Image 1 (cartoon, one colour):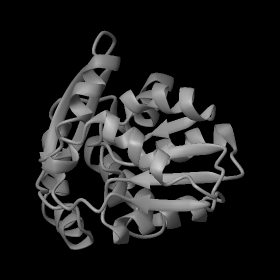
Image 2 (cartoon, one colour):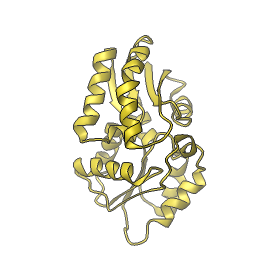
Image 3 (tube, rainbow, N blue to C red):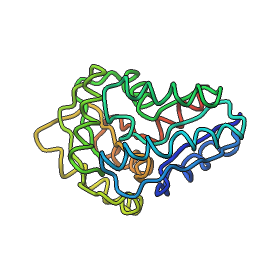
Image 4 (cartoon, helix red, strand yellow):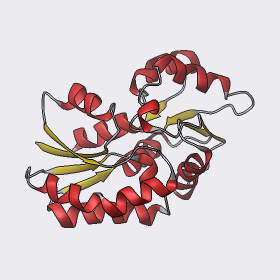
Length: 217
């Protein structure tokens, strides 16, 4: 299976995760779209300026499936905005498109939590957008909080232990029955096991949801 991956240029985590979990069964090819700071304006510019070119580049690998690998850019508007990104990729490549946001929502619907908590490395504006997208899908979070990091290269450098301690520090009073760790450039897959051991509840991450979506196809 040929998998195309479109990621922000400063993302240093999603490709290693994909190759580690899918590299034995898939041919994974990557196209990059320019992003340094994770802000609404920068992500919209990334979509406007670089996504069309990346779609044309990844098309030349003859992919069976293309993953749009940026959770927050998919959540800049309503769910129709994320669906439009997928449609644009499908029209430009002739392949099936999977956005990370849609993959995450599939994972959430499978669990059907009643008290979902959302954690991100983002500034609050984008963190709120993630929460709004999850709420639009029918799962309003009981807590939505971010680390406030703007530089994407810094997000990719956050140790897993810091993610675990950040989540633990934000749980007072919210009693979640499921946690979503949002961001493809966060070392969140490695946080799944320790958080599940500590909290005893399901943990969803952007990259694991995307990997699971590829595996289903």
